[in-house]
Length: 321
Image (tube, rainbow, N blue to C red; front, side, top):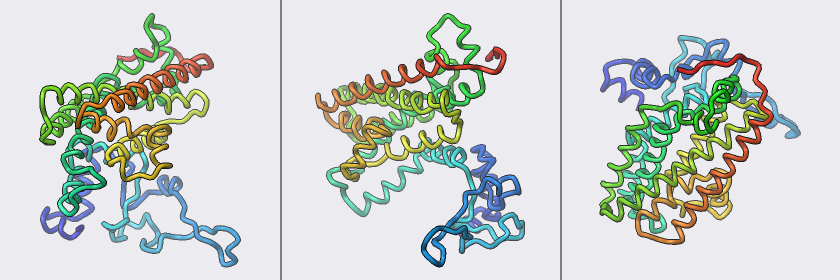
């Protein structure tokens, strides 16, 4: 694949990846040759020792060392080094332009359905997920960096305003690219072949409830910053988990996995469950979505305000423009 890219583009594989992907996406911490500072943050690889009693550090056998040697050949298969935040940018790009969906198009071209889920159903899953993701960014942009606001002491500004603190924090920033995700969701819904006026109403309702669950989950996860001081990396992992698992048919997962996707990381309420509701009106699915939205919203408000009580800022009030 790397060689095909070079032949078609007329430039080297590493230059193509850098100029066409990493730089436009702002993936500044992704490289084939990590520098000294990046090497200090590099995750270690381990293997059992000779006695099988403990683990010992080892190298990645497919890579040539030293890793920061600029003459080392870049490897298309497993040669990149990146961070959770940078990978998150890449995943959001795939969701935004529909490249991720191409995998399912190829899959369903070979297999007609997956336990009653077909390609048209996946259009609905992607549609709801994309629109919910985009709407969250448009209306509540700071839901994606709430932890950084907390750990950076920037809540002081919002505490000085006579408004609901959490609502003002979340809504004081909009992510323009969210409009693309939001509109893409409606296009995906239309491509499902199930579009109708009542179906459109169900789709909009499903998107609103999915957005509520998604934003509430982000608030819950990032409110842990009040106690743990976590930042952007943990947030990126949470976003990646929600977006990734929301884009799979729920029938693929075991009972224990479904418990995680409904309770711990509620990705099912951002993808499969609302998509099922859009397929056909179902009071049970509607009740599940409404209950999930209410429960996670309630938990988000409670946990955030509980953390707000112990909030101690070491910085002066900062004015946000």
